[in-house]
Image 1 (cartoon, helix red, strand yellow):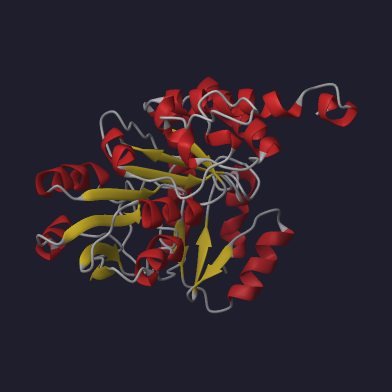
Image 2 (tube, rainbow, N blue to C red):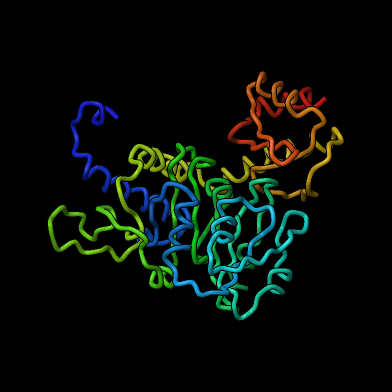
Length: 330
């Protein structure tokens, strides 16, 4: 930041070096190749690469999950060649049998969130990965609510496309996201735009400007360098703590909240398991505005979604605010 303030650096090459460092840190964190990682601004932009870079045919089907995040579902609904098919979640989860029943020879992809933004339910991505390989169907996953809270190993659980905005559990500003492509998918995609970041050697010259063959080919324009620098620090911090410790800590906080909610006899939109595991729980409250104001006064925060309150321990709550919830949940 001092270099930035005083102009004691070359921003052109600092951008490249920092973005390469982020790819290395992230690849180590979720066990994938840095060459398969592109830096994006948000999930919607990442999905646009799939929507406009893949050769879609009229009648191609994409299976979507009802009540999923709009950035996952709306792009496919808006595409003129794609026929969306919907699976209704059971207790907040898309069932493998229900998805398999929708697959036809025209099914091109399944797109869904790894963790539900609304309820925090964790989808069976490992089972879906196996199912998609059996049927030669692309698996496209938004991991915004998963990255940085649950263990992810893309070497063990391969997906064709993995994207995540980093504003949630990765503590980055808005305008920071990643898109990760399998080798097979990357080889079939046409970049929808190009710029200096998508060059092979990043030199500025009239010609030749050789396109990059890694996932950098899907980057263009100047990237959010300050967000990238912060993301590098986030993943270095995650490495020092360890994802197992992060997961255990947030899971324990979630369980404390869930126990309080059930103890106070509040209803939840789904039946949560005792080993819920994610960092999101939701419940109905008769006076949500009053509850959220009291929570704010005691140092916590919450969001209101579709008629219920959503709590994300570990970001908006800590042990101190959780301990006060017993009195706030009157």
